[in-house]
Image 1: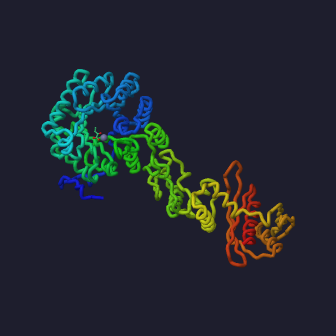
Image 2: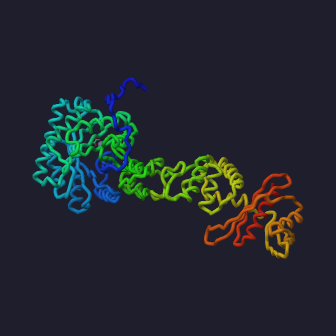
Image 3: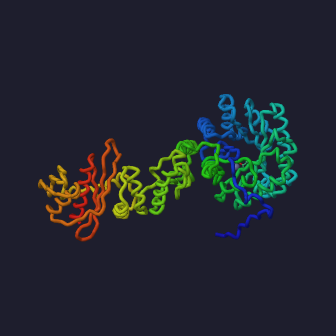
Length: 548
Ligand code: KIV
Ligand code: ZN
């Protein structure tokens, strides 16, 4: 790999930067370019029906500015524009945006396409970088500026003819990040002089990182430089349009907003040319997770994933921020333990989200808590306990959690794959609910100072009646068992709770005993009656002792 054929990007030497100390306090103006930049990068561009479908999805999400295409460039884009306008499908508070190159017939066709729209952004662009000027256009800076100014002047003229109040103008010095900053300001100022903006009639100056060439801090410096040097600043909306070639479009956009930008162009899930555009979903949810209203609705994230996948033919990565199938799931034992504790603590502070490893509450984006923890060989006791509690209402005592964690680990180490909650419950029953060699058939207790229990047991398929006395039903039953089975054991721990799982409400009891060998054995019992569940738990623990 010959890295020597590349040279480092030369950042502007800007030493009075103000942006690093700023924080973002409100959502920028969003403009979705899914239907233009996103669509033009697809292997199979969306057809008319898909575009209409996607447009209404963007409207439902809350976008007020939507770049719908490049109507002079293709028949589909032209018809789509007409379908939106003639079908009355553009809500009053939504402005469509159309892209045009600085060429007379293209600008004229663009105006024809948007005729009848209540409001439209006419977005003019031409390439301004040193590389594009030299290699693609073979034009001087002066000629490139003239191209932009000519286009701007024609747009002005046509807008006046069609009704000036119906249009907002936007100019992009395409390949801005590869353009000398002073020249970028010069060409934007030249276009602004033609359009003559005012605070009531602002112009959008969009500064694209058409190809991402540097670390995001350099983009922020470039944005701050333009904000500081552009004319008509109070009449200009500075817009960002970051591509993701280095994988940092979201960061670049966030730093660009800190550097003074007012508006952000991007796409959902970051679809767009090459490695994509800045992902508005991620930027918006990043704001949300800081307590800032993103002004976009991401509450049904799985619906967003499906319409996106259906329309673009692309797949959302399982690790995609906020939307991927696995992003709220922990497999690792220590993470599960921390999440489990965090969620438990949340019960005391339900209004303030602070849970380790979960930057946001998954239910905010329409997910459930169920898949937060999934179990494989990396998982631990906390995760297993979480699954049993969430899915089956089983809240084991701590010592039993540790024991059962080892049981599950032994299983997952052997099978090598993830196990589902039902399998975990089955393992729980196999391990702790045992009816051989002893099973409880019937019992009767009478209390008269002391408790007397008479129980009918099935021992090795033979029915036997046992009787014991003690200070309570469990004590009396244990006494009877010890005498009949001739085994030694003591109850170390006993606990129970009601089990709201399935249609019936039942009790579950957990028992820890130690045998003559001083080892610990566990058992559980489930029944509609607390006494029966307790005795069953004792029987299960004793069966475990016997079988070990
Ligand atoms: O990436 C880009 O520079 C563009 C322009 C047309 C704004 O998409
Ligand atoms: Zn772009």
